[in-house]
Image (cartoon, rainbow, N blue to C red; front, side, top):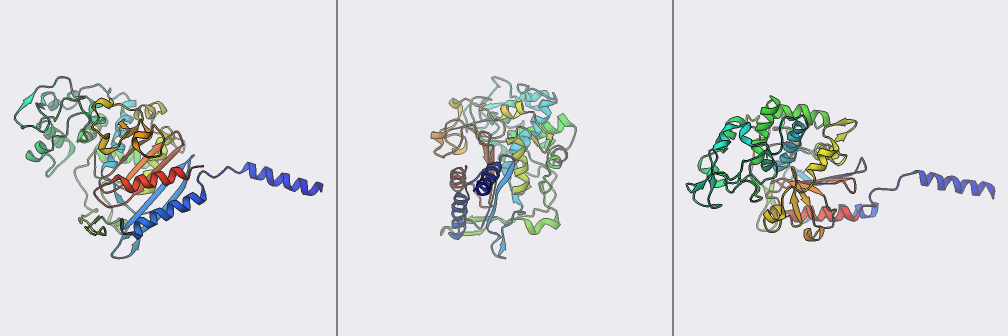
Amino acid sequence: MKQLALSALLIAVTAAAQPPPVLSPARVKTLKAGLQEMVDKKEFAGIQVMAARKGQTVLSESFGYRDLEAKQPMTAGAIFRIFSMTKPITSVAAMILYEEGKFLMDDPVSMYIPEFAHVKVLRKEDGPQDEVEELKRPLTIHHLLTHTSGLVNMRGYMEKQVLRGAPNLEEVAKRFATVPLSHQPGDAWRYGQGLEIVARLVEIWSGQRYDRFLAERIFTPLGMKDTAYFVPKAKLNRVSKSYVLNKSGVVEPGRADDPSREPTYFGGGFGLYSTAGDYMQFLKMLVNGGSLAGRRMLARSTVDFMFRNHVPLSVMPPGGPNGRGGHGFGIGGAVLVNQVESQVVQAEGNWEWGGAAGTYFWVDRKNDLAAVWMAQRPPFVPGPSKKFKVMLYSALE
């Protein structure tokens, strides 16, 4: 009897010493079935998802195909066009230099790019291009980082072909300064081109070409070996093809491109290729308060600052930033300020964003959680990734 009691005690002690699972295995099974159903219904050609919690990767699953015609399966190493998920990386690049004293948030952009001292503002948003007024307040770095700059005059940018044949960030930044802002800085939140100017400012503050700064200060330290502005020919077989939905709800090939073409323009708001694993390294650093594997990239106080809402809800568009109800905006991403208004089970304070081809992520520091959704089905629509979010939160233990 004593021996049985001792054995039972040892089993209990051993069980107590083992950490509880961070995700429910049964709920993860349901999650996987839900994502597989999206592929089976031909809503997506392929999906790759990943989640990390409490310092470890707890979910990494692939569904469908990265090349539907060739029946090449989606894999963890698939490379995706992340489009606007470049913007959070650009924001972190700027904050690295902010910590080094290279600028202050309320610095006028014209301190570093003099052409912006003379930028005009449309008298009426979306009004005639020749009806302009003077700045009522300086255009600042903070305006650029929070999408309150007014750099959203797409008609003006098209008329002056600002991004056509873009040779480099220096020239493009000067071109942007010749086009009137859509609204006075700080008067409204409009998703725009401010991060292109931030990328140029990173070059000015660091003395490095933008892509080289990212590689040296972010990608290499975080081990993001597959993240860049082009894909080497040796990796082209890993690139996920882009698909769109046709009228029957079936995926078909999207616009072809050449990922191996090396650019001369390195956008602050778009242009990067990455993998779920690489982007998760970036997110793990943020959920951990700015450090990863003993290497600190940002101070915890800086990450706290980025993840706060910086934009008064009174200037946000109806429905929140890009249709994200219940969200304000921080530095580099939307910030959840009202869970109920978002209509999605999640944690207030979440920091998130997505990309035009269908990629998406969020960081939840309250639950020590980061997640990334990778697909290549433009345009981005929030519904499928919201379902992924609900299913993942339901699996948290």
